[in-house]
Length: 356
Image 1 (cartoon, rainbow, N blue to C red):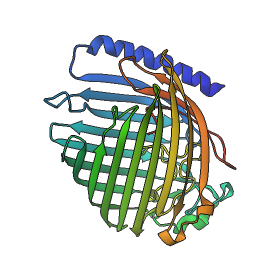
Image 2: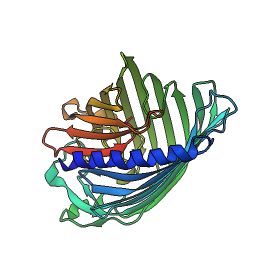
Image 3: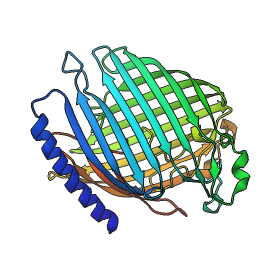
Image 4: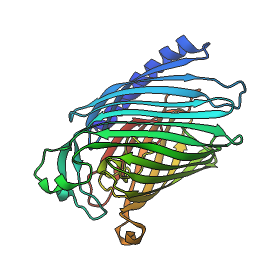
């Protein structure tokens, strides 16, 4: 009940903010949107902070998508702190994507691999800084190709619990890596925030050196199908890495601060390894009064190598959620999701934007 009241309170705060923002910026090309950030998740407890998003148009034609720069500052009741800036900038012939991220995040660590249990968890504490900057050139109206630079650094991990056996986990001693990568992007979605039709493919291959030299491949594929005013949304994500991969760079079935939100119903970082495969589907139903609901399900697993993929170890999650459209002229939603997975604690998430 408290999460539902929190959801309604957030609707009131954001609606008031948007109303003021609309009055001040309705005739401006640049739009500033300040938002209170109030949410919750099992791993963080209550989340509170603020977000400022700036939207603007750099293109000379209406076909060019609007650009945005966002800054989020977030605290939690479990002594976690997050400062993250995301940028997505479009011009007539180019696309630039940026991520600058600082986290000080005590969290539960469950070990590496698909067979860990809740009893394997221990509390750890660390601070991390990372950045990824991508520059891409337009091939045609829907496709981009380019490159990126990456830097990531984490201080020494402090084990707060009693599982001292994890001290030898790659990356617990701290360190950094950096490198270059290649990327490809294909996008026919009608809206990048709440797509109702179209496809999206994003592929990255990174070459990384430093204290942890490794390679990393990530492929994200999404499909959105309109259905009588509602939407069926599908997503498939694949990761594979090789070399000396630190624990914080390993793919996870749930990563709340990444580009998508897989496996609602699992604790963040519940399963991680050098590779991961995950699929999720979602039915989105919208009402005319700006409210809506969703039903979703996920399946997937992590693995250390192709030869170690075990379909019997695939995990499953499912759930439902409520949606509230923040502005009538915008597709951005506030969402309340409740996720379930066998033998795992229920997950409740209050966040902005769709999961994918």
